[in-house]
Image 1: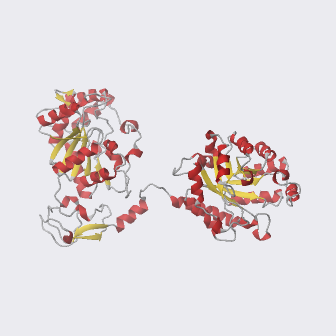
Image 2: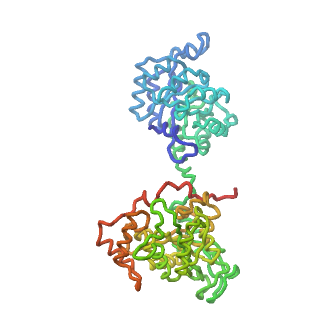
Image 3: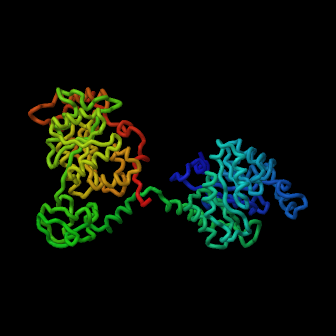
Length: 593
């Protein structure tokens, strides 16, 4: 598809894409094909995407008695002249468009295989002409200048629904020239919302004004991506349509400015590039000690101050993160606070339920004489620096069995909504006072306790909101969240029913995220989570080989078994890790609405 077709086919508010700039020759050639060819060259050198001619026959424009009839009759060109110009334009790297004013000019345009066609505002009510074009694959531009909303509505109604993705309205009219206070650029949005199709700009303001070059930037900022501008060789010669025609150097400046403007628009998504992140790192203030403080001190506002620091790897946190916290060590004045300086409670939350479409009752599946979830409980209970492990399950009656199992292991239980997983984690935070949550799914029964401890330390060392351990084998890792991050997600989640996929929610510049560095000896792409019957067979074989009631097995043992049995390997795939496209469902709705 061409750039023009891509723009017309784009959905409303769709990001990305390009702009399409049309050099309008109109009658700037004054009837001379050689001048027309020179203008085509100027358009190509100026960076236009296309050149547009006006293909006409005088009797399609005027009655024979009209004062302009003879002039335009003398400017009619033969098929051979038009063919030569079209070929030259394409050899110059340009697409070719044309205004047509009746059946004769339309048929000539069809015979020239023109790339796109435009209906002048004077012919918007000529529905048969519009319908002939709509029956082809040729993109159609409809002039909206000097045209009523009724006329535009009826013109669009003349086009079949299936063809409307190839239609654009061009806003603007020739006032010889059009005054700035007659432009009403805001009306472009009204037309776009009314008809649901793209609206391009064909302004005709005085080319001697600076605004002739700058004005299109306003429309660009409103979503316009198709621009038409008259071009001439010498405006002072005052040829036809000279009022609003840019000379070659001006046209090039106009094109360059529009393309730079498109780059400046960037993305609607609120993210930060490298330059903005560098600015943030240099300028954001961090919480520091306003005075020397002893271990055991409860931090209050008057003991803290904000200051810029030169350790740009440390994530800045708001003052509220420290107020009321107890110091674990004595610090000197100007000390930059880290989470590791204060007392925090970490909870290991096991998210599990009995229902599973791919592997029913997997949480209770027998593995070396114990329920699979029981193995995870055992692993959770040997993690150091964790206040307690907690089972976070649903209130569904079928999960009563999991609750009984948890109690048999001395594991606390939180129950909540089956879809809103986050609500269960928040309940655990509120019930047990966790500052940090280690989230583990019930599928990850080969959890490695040592790396869970490393997650806690890494988060506390770097003042992070979230840390993953994705370079570990799947099924052995956890992820760490601060309670404040989870509460932020709870408050602003677009759809809390998708909080099973919490990792997607923290993919936002509002959160400081990190990835736990993993030693090479532990880095494997094995998939060892319980998700399918094949997974269950694999995990059984692993634990039958390494499980010992008296001595916890290590991650080294798991990896060694897999390395020695490569035929059992089931590496991660994007399709398996991301079971469905849920990105749009896992966004945060910030704001005051």
